[in-house]
Length: 158
Image (cartoon, rainbow, N blue to C red; front, top):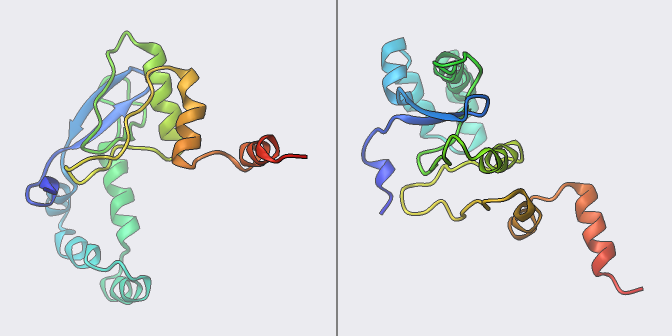
């Protein structure tokens, strides 16, 4: 069951500098505080670009602008002040002492992986060690163009 659709949960953020996680105000609460709730609710309904663009013109703001403002407001680490990464509701942080696991999580985040599931399953579990990243990226299709070319060369018989 997609449990995140039925209740507002605080957003999960991670500070890679401090190796700490924090739960921050949910975007639905933040837009109410800022008086942007009507625009946010209207714009999040539209997945089709043309419809969303027309609505954005009417409202004088964009969905992306609202989300960026939210992140600018809430994503500062309360401990060190660095910008934190939005990790998704399904993120389970490694222990603070586990530097390698945190490095794995940061590398995954830098390659576009976060834990934005619907409450059913995020669909993958991160490797515990840096040595497992190459296999993880291969399995989940996130190799760079150079790595993809190298993989094709390795697997092509001459």
